[in-house]
Amino acid sequence: MEKDVLFKKRMTELSKKAYYRGILTFSDFLDLNEQTMLQSLSLKDTGVSVKLWGGYETAERQMAAFVPDAFCCEEDYPLSCLRIQPLNRKFSDKLTHRDYLGAILNLGIDRSKIGDILMEAESACVFCHTSMCDFLIEEICRIRHTSVKAERITEITDFPVPRREELSGTVASPRLDSIIALAFGTSRSSMLPFIEGGKVFVNGRNVVSNGYALKDGDIISVRGKGKFQFGTVTNKTKKDRYHVVLYKYC
Image (cartoon, rainbow, N blue to C red; front, side, top):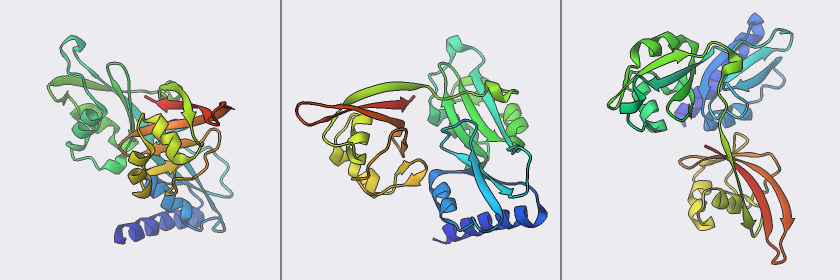
């Protein structure tokens, strides 16, 4: 609880600084819990709006920009993207998201300075605070037994976006527990601990009701499982089941 209080105090201070100085202020990368807490703060009448960005539209970890109402310039987030890839792909290990993140954090970098990590076929793209960019390029040279190099992606238009695969199936009802069970190929009962344990987020907001009704286009994140977008209900079967389409992020 003390950690949550300190976080809210910090966000309020950034908001006040933006308002009184008439400048943009930015947070570090916020996880989904922190984004939910930020959205719960009463900042609407402070003369400051909050905008979130993590390098691409559906990023899970995002920075908050506190923008004074009179500010008319585009937000320039202190965010960079690095591509980390093996020096010799023929002899490289099969590296996972956990491998890349672990190697970065082992350098002593705080998790709040690192955004999403998007996996590619033989490399990974890491969103990070711009202040960490040169350090990572210099220091990240080995992951497990694989020698790697990091290069900065200089053009925002070249930033990666996550790959998605389409899934479809039938559910008894288009409610949260049924849909996430379909998305991750498991039972509704096995997903209940995730929902009740506060590990499920819809559009960045924590949802603890298994009967929550999803809307077309909702982004659902389940900690420890992954992320997907709810497409739509296409039709109802003769057995009164709902045929739905989902888009699972790879």
